[in-house]
Each structure stands twice: as structure tokens, then as C-alpha cells.
Image (cartoon, rainbow, N blue to C red; front, side, top):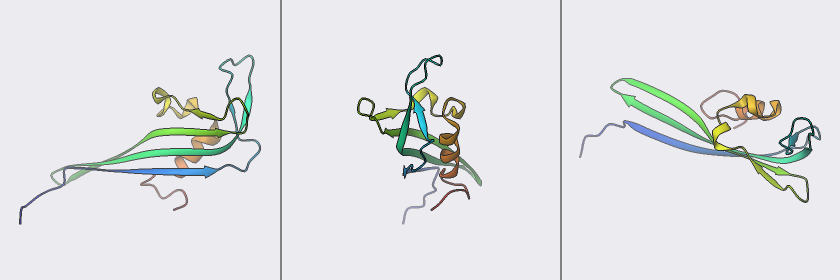
Length: 112
């Protein structure tokens, strides 16, 4: 048998949430002076958790790899968070930031 040691390991987790709250909206206007809020009916979040081992030290990091909104609108059906903003929750609606934290892997929060 070959002796081996794990030095790097990752897992990917996807969560798809039905949103029943009428107040869950996304502004698709791009212009703060002229908001165009559209109701969100589903939210999909993808995470990547990475463990890096060096000797007896284990470092764990979780990153968000995708956030997708399913919208209740004929012209705007799907929206995505730009990759540059995936780790910037201040750029998202507050309710999205709460759900991202709630369902983040490697935490005691969220439903499993």
C-alpha cells in the first residue's frame, strides 16, 4: 500500500431556494434614481469549500461561486451576480446576504 497524505481537498455545494416572500425583489435598473424592483421567485447559490493541510495545520475556506435569481417578469427571467461581486455582500440585497450566510457550508447555520 502506498502511503499518502491529503494536502488539498474541496467540495462543491449547491442550494436552490424557492422564495415565497413578496418583498424579495431585485432592482434590475442599474440606475439608483430609477429603481425597477422585480420579484424573485427562486435563488440558487453555489459554494466551494476548500481544506488545505500543512503538517498538522488545516485551513478551511468557503467561497461563493455563483448566485442566480429566477425572476417573476416576462422580460427579465434570470439574473446573476457578477463574479467580481460574489464576495461582496454589501452589493446584494440584505435578504440575499442573510440567505447566503444561512446556507453556507461548514457552519452550524442553515437547514441541512
